[in-house]
Length: 106
Length: 122
View 1 (cartoon, each protein chain N blue to C red):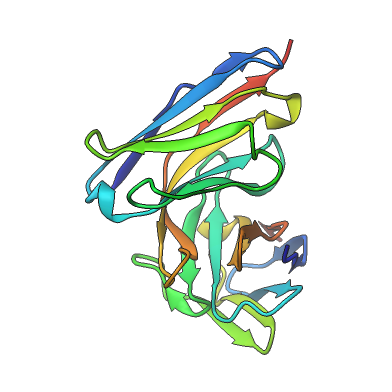
View 2 (view 1 turned 90 degrees about the horizontal axis):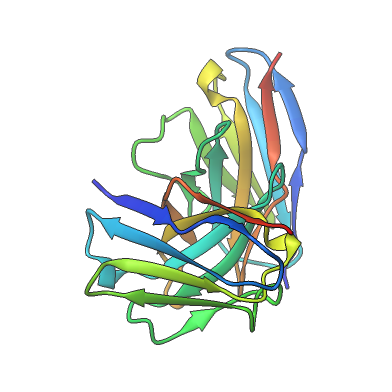
């Protein structure tokens, strides 16, 4: 099974700062990677699918990119409501989530 | 508006069974694969089971294979998860999700229910 290495595990950033979270699969997965945000006590919500496509209704300050086998989620101009835990998800033969990144405001 | 509403959770003893339900609305249920995802308290997300839009094929990780069964009733727009031989490590919030994308296997989950808690304890 493919393993997903997500980093960092936690992150503290200031308002308006640019934040980047990365995921590295143990094998190639093409563009079959998505990103989710989970706010405290809530269900996860889809942010990005197909590595770079913004989900409906998601603010444009969120973006996804791929460089080789490394995938990144970028948040431009961090807002208060962006705090929470972020997960990546890959699909090869099974679905595997990254370990999560806890994002807090400094 | 797409809605997924789970029910059936609760406290159950180890070795016993429980069946979760998820009623879907706001979309054509029989056009989509569906999936259960779980999250143990304070932990990350784990894929639990997936089912094709017709119900003809199902998929499980090794951690639940042989104990859990996903099924659906397209006439009732309802997804199920039958959980047998429950263990303490199955304690989690279980989310019903709609699966999208991919030629052969969906690769993202665009709608999630509010989740239902299952606690396995004596």
